[in-house]
Length: 120
Image 1 (cartoon, rainbow, N blue to C red):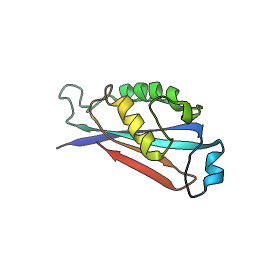
Image 2: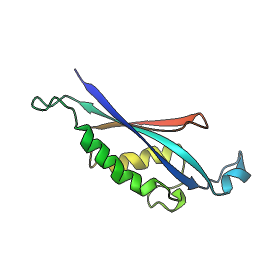
Image 3: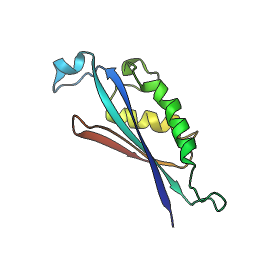
Image 4: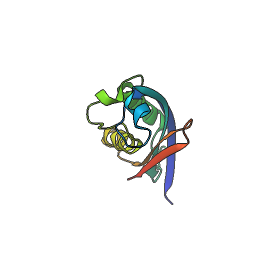
């Protein structure tokens, strides 16, 4: 049996985005509340009964949040254009070395109704 555990978090950030549709409003600096969820998979450790200690997951998420929360995403090194796809990739790249059991990353904007999932 393979298990999946998850942890949700959010961050508030601003950005600009070059695009053809809704171009004027996207080019202006604007912000969103982004929701994210990381999933980790595997077998529970026989001694602890856990795939990964969620306290460790929360600690690594807090480390990551400090790079994104209340930042201008245009200035975050390694992110690229602040698309949902790039946010998923960035989160995965940052957390995978710290959480090798990472299996997926989902980012969505509740107010907009859009989201993206990166399956690893």
